[in-house]
Length: 434
Image 1 (tube, rainbow, N blue to C red):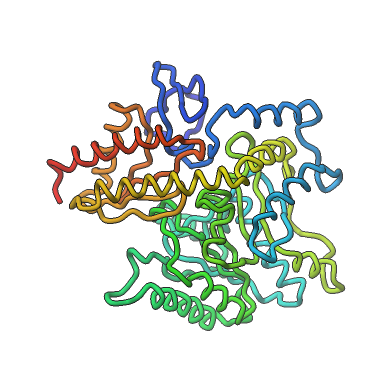
Image 2: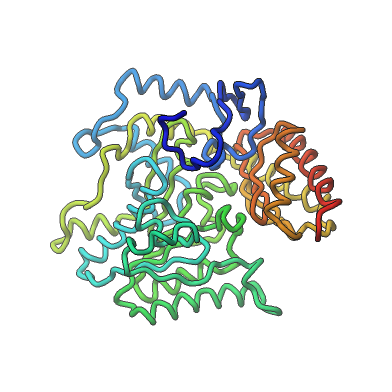
């Protein structure tokens, strides 16, 4: 372990994994752990070792692992694109394969937005507006439109044309006596005010996670928020970029989380849930307006953004197999019903507990927020009991426990997790300061 530059060099290396199958991780010390985090970053949405996905990958490897999609045609990408658009919001009819990671998808969405404005004769539209307490990737532009204190030291390196407004969090940001609809309208007004401050002709796009991520604790938007944001963007010719790398492709019980809000963005970034950890692939879902602009007399004739592993062939094989499973009424129904069952149990059995603040989210993407002193310490204590006593991995830290289990989690497994968690929550709270 002395040859690897690890992200956390002060920490001891993690346990050695000898096998992962279904929803379980097997470690070299003999443990069999039920993973409710889907691989820590919620990417393993079908668990591990799904034979259908592995068979599709083996068949692809027998042909080739990757060919350059700018030179050669891979029909599998067209089939995958058709599937991804089959349940997309109305008007989205193009998929741009950008690379392997969600960070690459967000970087591409920003560049595609700028090129659309540039080639249409609006070269001055160089500003991007995002929200506080957000995370949109590890590239410099991704960091720039994020707001994470530990990354502030990168600020001297970041592009200058970036602005932010408040996060949209009905549990945190609403004023006393303010309705959800009024809160949504206030958020949209803040965006409009920021656009006017910068100058409407200077703004390229507004960026947001459709449902706030685990940094905040899996918070959906208040009713009407995204429609109001869409109206502001339309008013000033500003693109709407939605980040669904974490919250999309089935996580919410719908393929696109924004479908719950009945809104059509200009660009949707998708990534980790696409290939489900079997092979990396990321993309931007958009419409054909960019294509028309690029090939117009003022356009550059090509998309000025690309990577070696665009449309990675092995990743496409894995993603197509994964999405054929996810894009079914049976799977989406299971995600919705199991998520509702888990939230109902948490509310029913902890709702009157003094340390319980709320449960929020959609599908199998939700959090319970803690209300006590030293919330992170409380979360870690609960997590320790779950791991050591119940052999269950949970994502408990900061102010919440975030549940992002694989879609393949069964009702029996879910109840086992909840039995342990509810018991641990109550047990730790007994001697914990309020």
